Image (cartoon, rainbow, N blue to C red):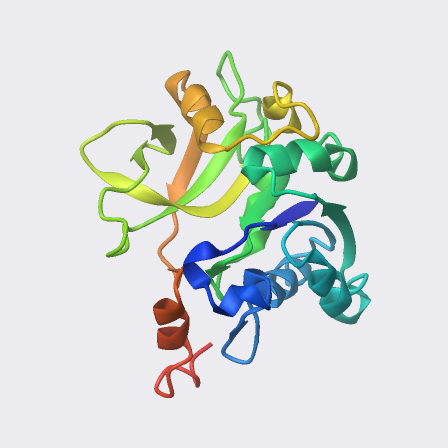
Length: 238
């Protein structure tokens, strides 16, 4: 399995920090945000990683290189202008291959997430190796989290491992998902396109699965959240 880390965003809410540093390179507890992901992926045996970039992208390539120092093999997908999430995937499809891949937002902090679990997220057989009794395959598997204070309404409902657009209890998309490449067939390489409408379309068809992740997770979207993570009483925590 391959992985993609999204690193093309401008990080407007993180300004002025992101005026001179791409958001995924901001340091949290001693290492850049994106390095936490790389190390966790490699630990799970996922070493082939694609990183897209736009704003100050050369700094990302200079900082990470080919990934060898982390035990990874990094390929880059450069975007002159950020193409949003689905657009970034479409442009990088030739690097991702034809098998399901995991994609991660470069601006989240989740130090204990076990990427080993994503390898079987879209498997076509059950735990005993028997085919699943269903007429269609899920095209995506999303990891949701409890709604943070800054996003109280959530994004999706979760009903027995099935993602729904509406429901009594909604959760927030963590920024970690597993996708089949074919779900992006409608997006032409080079076109800008958000991911949410595509996910909602397939969720309406009942073709998106998911689960709730209960470990440490932070959307490092503002200087205040970054400072809180790096506060002296937090620095000793993983």
